[in-house]
Amino acid sequence: MGPEGLIDAIRARLGEAVEGVTDSFGDPVLLIRPQDLRAVMSALREAPFDYAVLLDLTCVDFAAAEGRFELVYHLYSLSRNVRLRLKTSLPADRPSVETVVGLWKNAEWLEREAFDMFGVRFEGHPYLRRILTYEGFEGHPLRKSYPWRLEQPRFPPKDEA
Amino acid sequence: MSGFDFLTTRLEAALGWGRKFSLFHYPFITACCGMEYMSTACAHFDIDRFGAGLTRFSPRQADLLLVVGTISHKLAPVLRTVYDQMLEPKWVIAFGACTVSGGIYQNYAVVQGIDRIVPVDVYIPGCPPRPEMVLDGLLKLQDKIQHQKQDWRWARKD
Image (cartoon, rainbow over all chains, first blue to last red; front, side, top):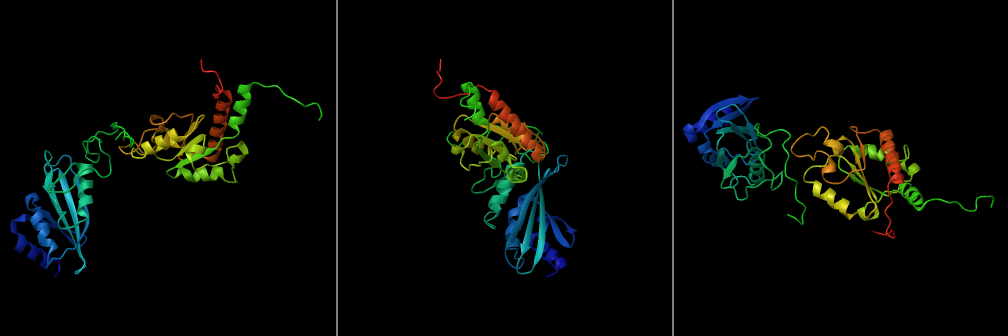
């Protein structure tokens, strides 16, 4: 299944969930509606697509854009040796999307990182809390709206925590 | 013996002299400044010439805390614990721009100067500081120790 066949197969299977298709250095990039993300992911996880590996999950803050937070998923298929990138845009006021922890175990930490740095909520995540910063940290530091030089509360010592 | 059978001094001066030439230091090294610390501590520049050559890897045996390298917010309580474990009298040297002010890391993750966590006696700026600057800082600390009020346990606490 080449790239064109793959996109046709995905479109046939998922229909209007795919908002657009582009290309990045030979690898297909799909733009997905946020409410269909989980369904798309579970379809791609199974045969015939068989994307067994979630390589990366990250977020981009386009401060001025309408769909402000863009989640980026990188998938890799071991059996077919191909990569796929999926993007979905979330609104600024309440960025929220369904979790993919049930499909790829490593999404647990990747989603926690996206939550910590950008404040994106992953509905259904088993343990959504900060991973790189600490409890008591205010705000989400990789948002464009995060004030530079913001003083954070001190990380508490163990016996005071 | 030839005319040097005794000498007179003040207890304060003798204590200061003894303390400034017997600094046992604890290197709290987290980043690239550690290379300059190693260069300073080893034979080429040799801080042992100034009586600070004995490195202790337990804070309970040290009286000079060398904070070398970037201190993040998550590391801050560890540094504070190490400082609290040291016995009096104790001194702290902030080694390098990161410990002095956060250095190039003016961001959410890094403590903007370790004097927010522990009291600092001598600041050595530079990214990293050259070994000559470190030795200069050490000499300044020795000068400070010599001239500060010496705290000793049998002094009367009035």
